[in-house]
Length: 236
Image (tube, rainbow, N blue to C red; front, side, top):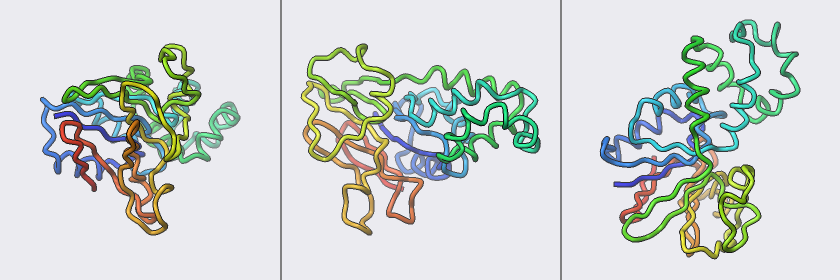
């Protein structure tokens, strides 16, 4: 079976619950469409978990892109205890936007890793792709983190900039005139639903938004998982 999730944002416990609910097997394929990290409680445990799963195919999210740029500049001697006192000043301009955008929990957990674990995490992040493709039940799908910014019909994907995959904000009436159905996250579907409603996967004829705001449960958010064979949606 082929499953897709997005925007886990450190919700490792919910991820494990979802894997149990769908009875995820090594023979299944699981595409994770970026934003593993930041905001939630366990971003680094989530990354370490996914690194060891042979059937997880990760895409780059805007939060991974920012994490990677910042982490590559951090001193090897920095720890959670000494970072702000000794090392923050030298990376303040770069890291402040990340910290202000929910990155502090990721930063502290990353700094608590051994040197070998840090290197393994960074290597893993460099392997994240900007997009992926699959065909399930004869239907071609294009998977990205956020949709496609600056979309043009017949424009090759290689002609798009990285931020076009990471920072798009499609609206309910956005149409992607392609042969492929786009699946993405990044913009929580809570924004498209009545106030107080539980978030749901948002389907249109040309795209599917699966970001149901897992890290925002108080606002109606929850983790969603889409199975492509029958387009069944699971929620935690």
